[in-house]
Amino acid sequence: MRWDRALLEGFPRGTGEAPPSDDKLRSELEIIPLPVLLRELAERDPATYDRIDQQNPRRVIRAVEVIRLTGKPFSQQRAKWSSEPRNCRSGTGIWPDTAFGGTSSAH
Image (cartoon, rainbow, N blue to C red; front, side, top):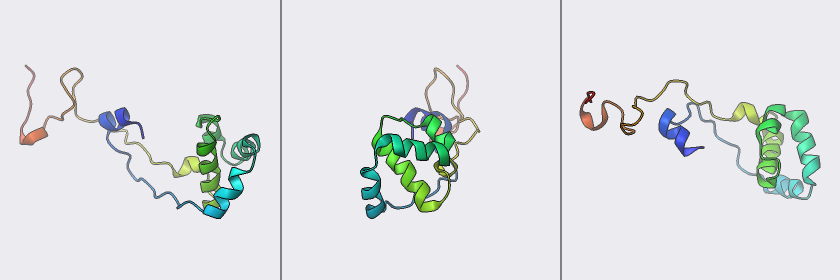
């Protein structure tokens, strides 16, 4: 998760639990060439394929692993960010108006 986004927008809502790693499956995936894994990812989850760092084997392997374990696209299992903005003012700090039990007023 990006810390700056979490700071400004809050933590994602509805965060799902990622399935635990499967050591046997992970070992099988680690010996498959990256281009083959990317091809599978492109076929099974084009949205993740478009966004993932395609040069990072760990991320690609984990995405394919989760897809194989759950049968669902990795992109559908990611947490959804809240579209509600946090109550903060640009240039005045990061605290919401009600931080520390008080209210703030424009100075």
